[in-house]
Image 1 (tube, chains in turn brown, orange):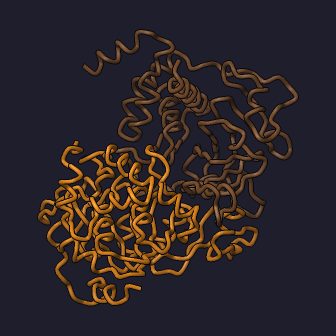
Image 2 (image 1 turned 180 degrees about the vertical axis):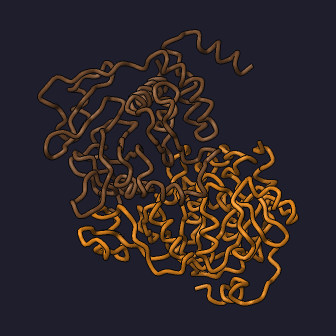
Image 3 (image 1 turned 90 degrees about the vertical axis):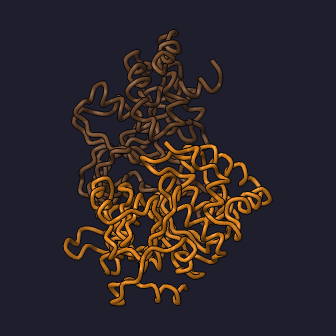
Length: 262
Length: 303
């Protein structure tokens, strides 16, 4: 496979890995610039969570008046699941979307936290994800805590970190201090490889199971229904990652796709 | 501080007069002066790009920009063109087209003042502005970087439940709001994109300047009011006809992001020299939106 195809395949696994966490009847919301979780939410709804409600910021049929009504709903407790990412994610699941280095004089300016400093507190289950898993993105401590994974008892918080999902596997909070530990590896990836790409100690005492690769059903749904629904919102992503989603499972997929477009 | 023009163009509810609201892009931008606090909406869709280009043509300086919702190429263009003294924002990015080049560069150089806000908290601050109250409590924020960066974000003990600490943020009441809409009618009523908070923003701002794809009769706007957010003219100061006024960002239902133009922008932003050429081509003081539409071949991106 080419490098681009490898990258697309890694993101495809990440989409499936996130989708498998989502449950039927949940209210699932996806924020700005989040094509991977948007695909995951639509995939879950198509396969195992048909009664889930999915809101994707930027969807053409957005049911709220502006973002205000949506944020109000979130603050009232109306959103069960949300996805966040970060330029850095640290050992405890704090995220940094602001700056590498000093946030007042950044070495690298990141885009900004968007809604994360409220979202992380207010949505019940927060799934962190990162499309690239490298040591510099997983430091012991974030340079700036744009949004925190836990709060003191005198701060209202219903949001709980479920885990960190990457192309290499899944880290989950464990033990009394909630430090992240490797809970699952991606197909063909070893725990030692994950440790080499992570800036803090992630190896648990017990053996780590391996996730199953994207199934034929997952690939087919991604290539068809999810592709169509996501195209108006993330045209670049769907063409790069989802268009050939079924390729690995079905070598004739390219032919079928061409017939569809004709 | 924009005091002169802002005062003369105040809402009719405040002056008792009802001036004509339809005006040219040039007239509308003249309502704002150097140093004013200007709020815009829109990231990679429905950004008020015609207004932004006109601000550059008019040579405005030292504006304090407030980005209401996630920001994109419009904000980056204003930063790159040297129009801003400060920018208040929750996130600035070109979305699928990568990081915002001028935003990154100027912040890494320390050449612009940034006021970081969390999106839901910023919208709450706009709502407080619209309500005429001085501040608003918001969830989250506590013990995050925002409380360190923003000395004007405070912590209160909830006066109704002393077991809880809660953050408060100051109201935002901009000198002017700029946004792009689907339609405006000849009375200044507006049909806005429902994905943004423009009805609220128009109420929070001292004046609201709206560009629209189409200017229609009041009867037509009423008929179509189900297809967007209706904003009554009482909240609108100026309505301007600006076809393709969101280009190169998307106008949902009318045209998508012009990916080719965004890539041209990113390429041009690699150096100050090439960016100067871009600005001269698309936002020269001597030109206007009609010239822009021809140069940017906007009709080719229509749905």
